Length: 118
Image (tube, rainbow, N blue to C red; front, side, top):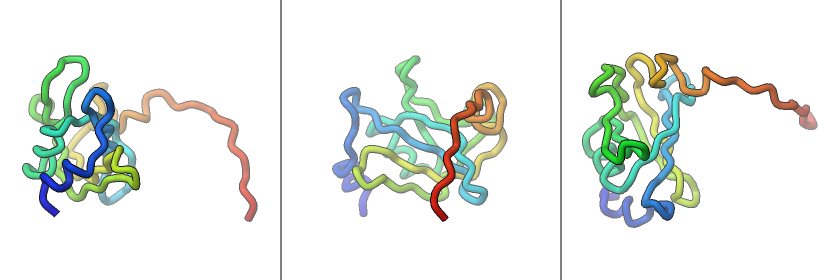
């Protein structure tokens, strides 16, 4: 499937963005969530490095260009509604701008955990 075919399938939100879950390819750690517009998705799928659209700065940013904490694309898949992207990467260094390995390490919550039927 061509990149143009993929872009035709994607359901971007009303701001033209697609949430992208970034996961370490071998350990399956969920590293971070970022957003891509059509061009960021195109770059990610064709350049082998993850590119996001910064909602705060209103510009493209390629993970690792300033920090050295690069994300090399291993695979990518759309969810069943084509409105969320999963990108498996080889993460070099920290994924979070705080320096943490994963963005979800910094504020753990304590939800009630129910036991399912076995």
